[in-house]
Image (tube, rainbow, N blue to C red; front, side, top):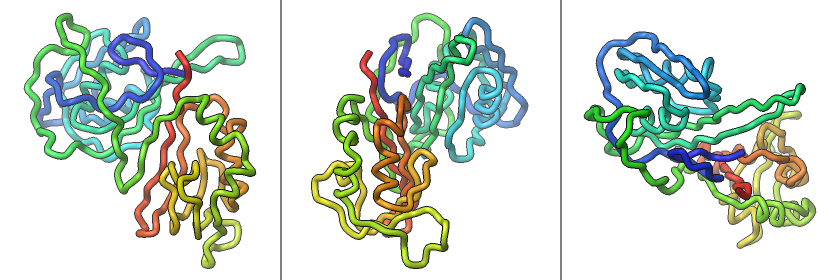
Length: 268
């Protein structure tokens, strides 16, 4: 599992780059033409929306759209033999996003590659119209350094963590379970997920993630949480396996939906 940024294979988080030229917004909508050859993506868009283009890339380019707001901005641009991350970086120049490269081995020993994409909120003050310049795949385009991680809407957060630190911090489920006092809320129907945090140890591993008194935590990466033991087990290295994104579903005390993401970095 890794992250590909401008042709350099890295491990980490790729987030929306600083605004750059390369995408033109235009009136009118039409379906995009997306083709993939030798791992390179070519797109012809004559006003298709961002959402339409990303959905077409889901079908043909191994992109998996995990979460996004409505992406109705129309785009008119052609992309020629560009990598998935190059295309995404220009399409989402006005958005905060995270892009993860995931490699899997099939039952017959072949390797497949997917890109997991989370699109967050639009950047404040981003322009509606971007002046076109060089399109992805053409020479002479200056590389853009990776900026700081985005903050998802509603107060959630993305935290970077080395794999070794994650294993050390979450390797003992009994220790994790003792860091927090929580139980299902009093009005929770039988069988429904969720624990209400009554107290949490200051400076503990869970507190450093941002979990606080009053939070309701319902699941971790889809595993239901109905007790502190469930939470600790779901966060254990054994449960997480080789995943590089851990999502803790959380509703804060102010009722805001604010999931916590842990991005685990593997060694290169």
